[in-house]
Image (tube, rainbow, N blue to C red; front, top):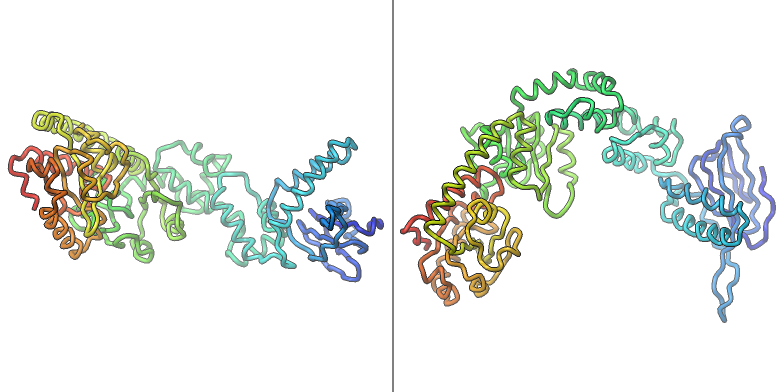
Length: 518
């Protein structure tokens, strides 16, 4: 099949969506056509397609002729040859095909405004083609498969088949399946099923119906889901749930999550043990799997049934965090959710909802009692929480300690603290702006070392010699209280630490001899 001769200034865009055969361009022959391939051919270059005879009716392609102009002197435009960039491959972009079909409909209408619309769409299509294309003669299949792996990890709940994945990779379905199995070790659909079943294992402890869980991970039939789950895990979903609730081995990747587990009467099987946040671990049977972040080898060796972690405040999952799901079902708590919701979410997962309810009831009763006692003693006098590091000072705001002091205990908040979400670094001189009646001193940016303990002690000792410190109302009145020796035990946003903070606040603020902060 040869294309008719065109104006000697016209370029040709040949976009092959699906075809088998070969193409001859000028004196150069491309032996094999591949799906989702396109060519930009210069003027006066003959083009001939040789399609496999019994597959001609299946071939789908676009052949578009167009001018390329450049501005010359005096604002005139003249034709230009963009050269021969060779064949390229289309990146996965369903939007592109939709735009080309829209352009085709406008061209067929023969209306002058629609022809202008078609011209605009064509320019957009060219931009999409060149931005998303590979200039290699053949896509790097490893990279192409890696993209489809990422797609399956992210969109596992959507309808996915191997044809769609192959189109994303820019190769035929059969070739994609063979290459995928060679690189990954299993077929694309087997890999997708593993992702879905692994995600289902995370959702089953939530107590949702099996139908809802099946649909949420991409199975339209709950009975097929159950058969697939048993084939891959050796247990039915119901049996898996019963086994899990008998007492899962839990790995806690954040000290604050360990605090929630302790409130529920659970000692984690393994946990990150951070000396800066000394949350107790019960009888000491917990396996230490890291200081700030878990050591992946230790986490794997712990063989947990469940991993608990929490989102980071400022970004998505790191590559390391993406590995957790491959070790055990992982529950990731939202960073900005409340500590009560964190506790209840964990309780639901580990079937301790009654324990969470009882714990919160006791906490609310204790808060009410402490609140009344402090109100009788302090009245409307405000409380400021000041964090001390080796070389910096901060004011803590409404989250963490503030959630207990200003929220649960309803202590008066100094002017300006309401605008601070977590904490704000300030100078010593700026502390006077808060005009607090009482000051609680605690740690700030503690790294858990004895060196930092000493640096904070020296920083606090030095405050007594500073005129700006001596001028503060709370200092003049002897209403400064120390709890910095506990590092970040009280600043951790969890139920266990908050209960301890309730008790500590009552001891310090109700004591007449609690001014010995230095």
